[in-house]
Image (cartoon, rainbow, N blue to C red; front, side, top):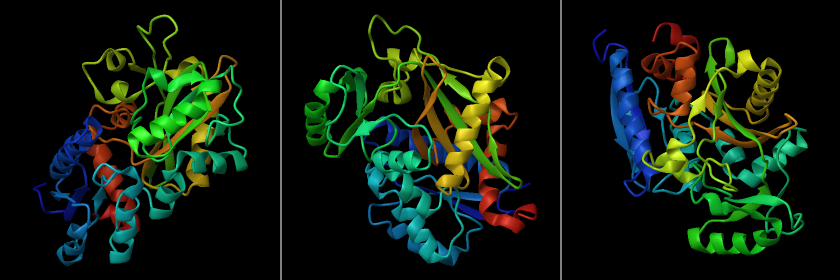
Length: 329
């Protein structure tokens, strides 16, 4: 099918060249546009300025659907919900999470509070470091930023040091931080994909911690996600096969991920990150709206493990907002 025969799909981003995670979004935009072209759509990358003015020109071009890759505006993750909110106001269909789901998961602390109220397991936490066991290990994280921004081996510390670390990191990064109990154990990513018959749990990926020496904290920090030449990146490969090796654990993780999907009203696609302690008890770390869509990222790897090639994955995501129209798009 020749490009343009199935409709116009703008591919939105608001990324800069300032950080590796931002550059990754630019790479994703190129890959998504190419995949849509391959599936017969007229795709065009639309880079948004901080004022999001480029959105106002879209209705006159009558897009079939808008492919939204915006997870930060000018490097600030707190502004990401502005894009679906504006698309809602313009009456345009778009991929991924709705505005309400973005708002409900933007703050990691607020997300954890909602999880706890729903009876879903998440590590205990403190907004300012108060009330933590001074001898237990905790991890200090940014409240608003995703993609492990600012997280490295020094983010894991004793609870007694958390209050000072929260204050220092909040000042350094100019964004709020909090501390949560560090779960010693294994880490898993559960990818969720919406389809005509509802949400589908893709094969579960375990993150392996190889080459971590001595007492080094086994975490997926910023370098492990975004610096391919770093020891952290090389030392954290993913592995599939949990469903066959440990079906009971896989079932629990899948059930919790589906519960998150329903609790937060998620649509399109998402990823739920877990730690599992030595007793096999799972803890929900984060819920990621619109996770990275580069062809080598974890979401695409999980889809491929399920037999879904990258162009088919992208076409599937683009079809969701069309509802009954998807069969003829």
